[in-house]
Length: 276
Image 1: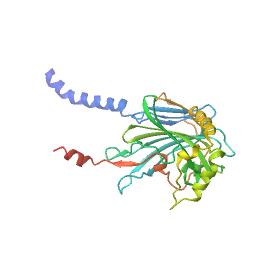
Image 2: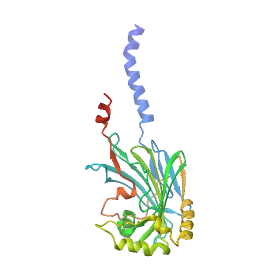
Image 3: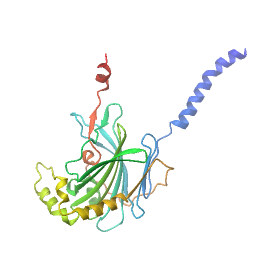
Image 4: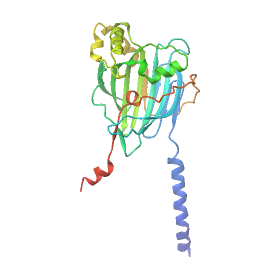
C-alpha cells in the first residue's frame, strides 16, 4: 500500500523539483547599466566600469542587421551604454560599452584575426578571464552611429575621433566591446581630412600606419588615457539602474559591422551530415 502511494506521488515530486530548478536556474539574465558601468551575467559574465569622471549619457537595447558572409543578414542584439565626462558643451571624451548577440546555432561572429585596415596598432591580451583584441584607429563622425546620437541631442562633436577598442568573443555568438574616444589630435587631422575628401562610393579609407607620422607623442599620450578609462572584471552584484540624460535617438540603426563586427553563417545540417 505504501509502495503504491509512493508511485503515485513520485511524478508530483519530479514536477515540483523541475519547477524549483527552473525558478532558481531559469531566472532572466541580468543586464544592468549604472552611472559608470555595464553589467551582464549568464554566459557573458562581465562588468566593465568607466573611470571616476565618466558618467552615463545614454543606454538602450536595439536590434540591427549584421553584415555577413552570405546574402542573408541576421538581426543582432545591441545592448549599449554611452559615457562622457561632461553633461553639456562639446564632447571631448566618450566611452561606450556594447554587449551584442547573434541568433545562436545558425550564426557566429567572424574572428578578429586581422587588424582593421585603418588600425594604427593591433594586439591581444587576457583580462578578467577573457581574451581581448585591442585596436587603435580613427573614427569618422560622418559614418558613426554614436556621433549621430550626440548630434541628435544637440551636442557638438569633432569630425574625427581617435579610438582604442577592446573586443572579446567569449562565445561564438556573443561579443563584448569597450571603446574609448577623444577628438583626433591635430597632427593627424589633415591626413584624415584628405581621406574624407577622397571617399569612393560613400566609403572612407585610410591606412592607420600612416597616421603615426609626426604624431607619436600625441598618440602615446592618448593610449595612456585610454588604458585608464576602463576597469574590466567578471560579473559582480548588480548596481542600481539610473536614467541617462540623452533621450533622442538616431533615425538609423547602428552600423553593426563597424561597431561590433561581421557574422558568419553556420550550416549546422551540412556539418552534421558531412561526417557520414
